[in-house]
Image (cartoon, rainbow, N blue to C red):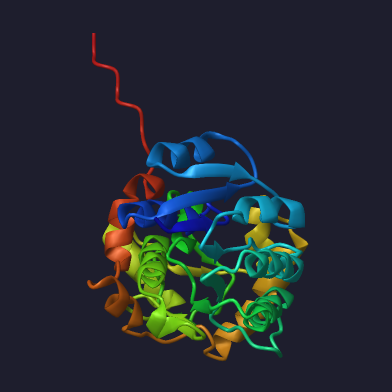
Length: 297
């Protein structure tokens, strides 16, 4: 039985990827940073959970021992290139059959965002390693709606991006299905950088209108600065995130996250999740729960 190492296994794409791989009959080793409730849920799914730091060669060598394939996913933080080198070195030592690498849609050597440029560099590292690799250049996740759900619950749709910038949001659950499909049948995709989008392209203003329609409340698109946006969520000190978002505002205006494709549907064999389906599947996150009124005495 093939064993797949899933890094970032407690994250938005890692967790459903673990589930989809197990459904397909793979043995899964889930790499997490700490042993908490999320790690226990991975065990409950049937994964072998290992603790490790992606910036520790020792930890990654241990996690990768006996593995045949691996998913590389690193958070929006400093250290991506170093983590990529470590992962590639350990994969080469283990003679891995395949690495699936989570990248950015606008990955390129001249990227304004250091995080995006580092994704491009990590793609090159995996290619140089000689380990067969597939790079996923993904547009914005539909999960952005969950990130701003605390504001949506109170009738505000707030984003730090120009209202006319376009993208086709893709659900992390669909990305996981695509990843599992690539692990199952890697041949057609090895050596490629795959641009992945959701099923319908919107401007940010159009997406706000769609969310308003589904939830049945009027929420005009509210464009704020990156600084104001981060302050709304208590992230005013997240400097790496600030620099990345500021660069992405320009990337979006230049159309670098726009577009649609049929590749994801071809890989998983059925249509991708629409915004309406995503909202309804996560409805409790978007609506306020009021306590039931006490019965009159």
